Length: 88
Image 1 (tube, one colour):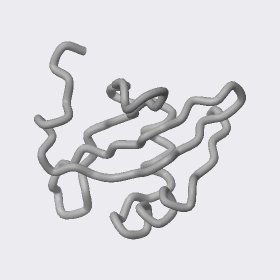
Image 2 (cartoon, one colour):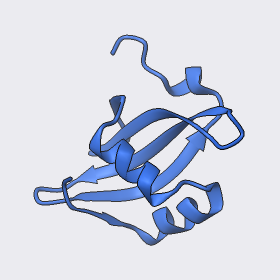
Image 3 (cartoon, helix red, strand yellow):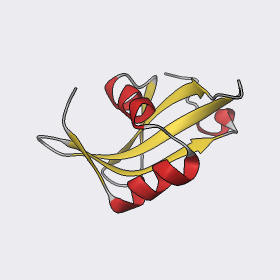
């Protein structure tokens, strides 16, 4: 796994949105999609099943540095079709 760091905002969002570190690392290591974000940021995203059986899209906004990934923010989206790129 490539090295990564979490911003304070990412740490807050992980706790607030119930995303585990293991889930975050799974998405970083094997995202189902990587899409362009704002400016130089990329969005790593994967569909994940929550404990209640509901599927959410876990999205990590990532600043890709030379030696590491900087996770800027983390969130989960219920409206998967809004973000999912069908052309990928």
